[in-house]
Image (tube, rainbow, N blue to C red; front, side, top):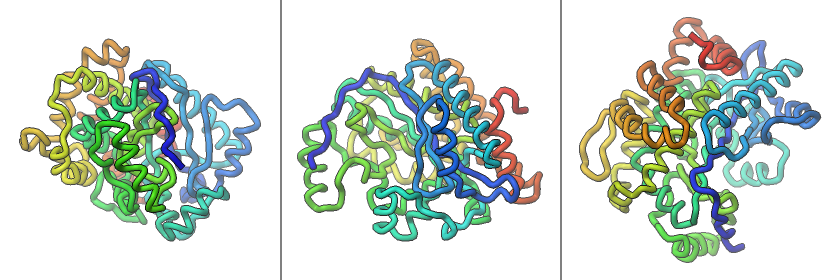
Length: 377
């Protein structure tokens, strides 16, 4: 079928999707409770949208469309509180984190939905190994070409989002030495990575999507697992590299960071994106996944080697006028604090050391999800 037309949206609007872990509060392993959770939430008025994900031990929640940090954060807190209350009734814990640190993929059950079973048939064990948890951020674009411009202009900043959101240091019971092990699972899929370098929607539709559809490999944009992809039915671009943070405060801050970056990039004061920018893309992505805020990156235009933490702090300072215009200065403050104190991968490693077990680490993540960031010492 033809690619859905790109529905122009109000520029710089934003929405957030969070994939969350469902946890047994006794042994802190994943709990196949999504059907019960969805049934309970459907009986009341949930302050957002909630739907199943690939396996029974995860759910996805999404916000309304927002323009301001304060309103986005308020809704995320309302959603969190509703989820926690439902979990308490079902004796199920909820938490963020890009991976569950010790679950076994072969024990997971595919959610009873036709698309998920189709994906399971296609990808085999990878479907169950895809029990990983990410934050997706949508940014509204005034036109399809504007969306493609932003998609590629953001390539230089993607490591920032990986490092700031990283919360998946453990996988299958061991410390992977990665701050974000989750993205290694995503990279296993054949249609992951980055989008082809096309800046005009007509060319994207004619010269890429139509040809891919003709091969029978893809049917819609849902079949692409790119780090950033267009969502024509929403009129947005969708950032997909973030681990789900442990708190909704961090999630809101990351969304507003992307919003402010897009506002700055739309001024077109920086050199336009080019195909050669992607020569260092996978290296920079790896550095952010492996070392988090302690990583380095290579600037795609100058080839200068940069400290990831220092580059984030410098970018936050550059974005202050844009954050003021968008009423999101508090979001930048949250990320400035994260750059100084460390990301949630570091928090989880400290909890593992203090608690002496992977179960204690999950318990700490459940506790942290329940509370506002400002109440956590």
